[in-house]
Amino acid sequence: MTIIPDMRERVHVKGRRGLFIVVSIEEHTAHVMALEGAPRVVAVPLNEIELADRMDPRPHKDEQGSI
Image (cartoon, rainbow, N blue to C red; front, side, top):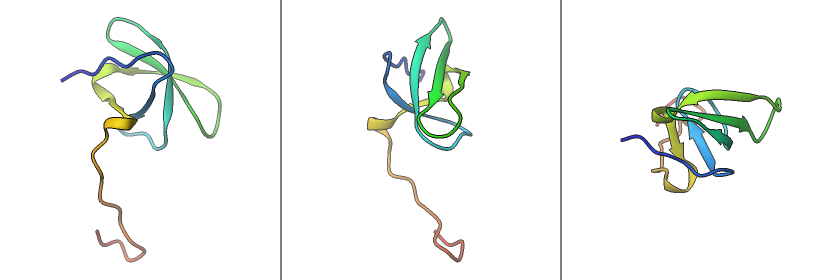
């Protein structure tokens, strides 16, 4: 299912680390900017976006690499 975020909504992007904010939306693409790091805008397909407030908890690896 494709999620269509609102402007200025905080999202996660598949394959990228960190939290992003939506700055514009086109037909099948959202332009997002990372909240930390280099302030650049990248275009990502809408099907690669996951809303930050609706995320399911994800397992994290501990120091030894175990989940």
